Image (cartoon, rainbow, N blue to C red):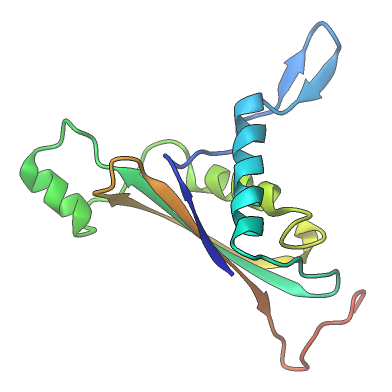
Length: 147
């Protein structure tokens, strides 16, 4: 299953503490982004892999090229010679995607045995993420829970 989420890639924001209610919560911007990821997965026809199946998730994050870059530097970005080394961090982008897919692409994120996130520049002014979710087959076929 593969799908795309348009818009500048976002990372999972740190949990916040509410001094009024004395609770920890996820910022609304992160929650909204995770909902969009889940919706795009469902819209693309994604099905939930049940417990007992291994899962691999690949994420390619494409960032818009900064407008301040020269024509030469922009071309280097398009050619992959320059890659984004700015925030959000790759691990936070991956965490947002994995949390957004939890309960939709797989029963529980403990099923994930492989995960990759790569960051690139794109000529697209908006940016986007491309996500692939697949079952990982083992030599004996389907894995047995608890083994």
